[in-house]
Image (cartoon, rainbow, N blue to C red; front, side):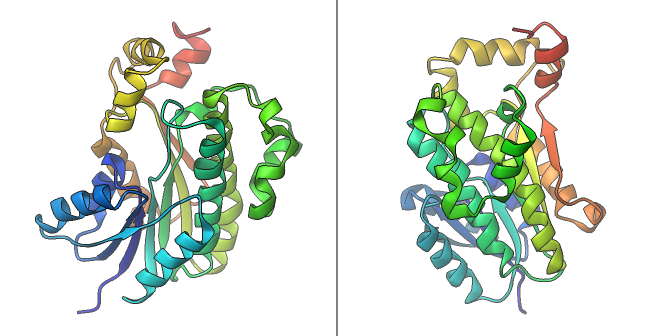
Length: 275
């Protein structure tokens, strides 16, 4: 029996939770820069009855993304995409955050959008961080959305002298992710496919634990303590949203960002987390 093909990037907890939720009966190509991480997650899923092929892929490299797409196409048309790859402010310098999270995500959405099958759907994972920075000008938002991918990192407001620190770089990258989804969903729509974004708050993953133990650890712990939910989230809760967005139940949803942060952003602007 021919299987639908799904590309999943980022061998982490959120990617795995989404893949487990919607990946049964599908051929899953799992990409990550670390082949060891990729093989570990692939084994966990294959041992649970899924069909996963690990693939070494660097999100910051267009040729690497294209190679993963070609691998997936060996098994048929690509019907689904989940992008959970990225680095956090405590894991990487400014340049790497912009190259992976901003540029790499834009390239992935563009390249998959060229081949996504009719009726297909994709989700990319951004972050609540994109919601907690000063508003950009309409011109800057438009530039993040529509600038040709190979020119993105040349935008004046993304130059080193205009990026304060790694958190600022991460916020800019995640804002770009949301704008890029709005732009690319139009092109995906021309192929009869949909594209959306999930902006998680603090989700308990190895990446989040790095943040808890990093220079902003107390800030993040205070954030989930004072958000309306009073706790961090789980990867499976993000999979709940992805399941809606990638199923027929979400057929009228495309180009949207779903903020899922336990109310932390609301508390930041209108509650006890106000700066």
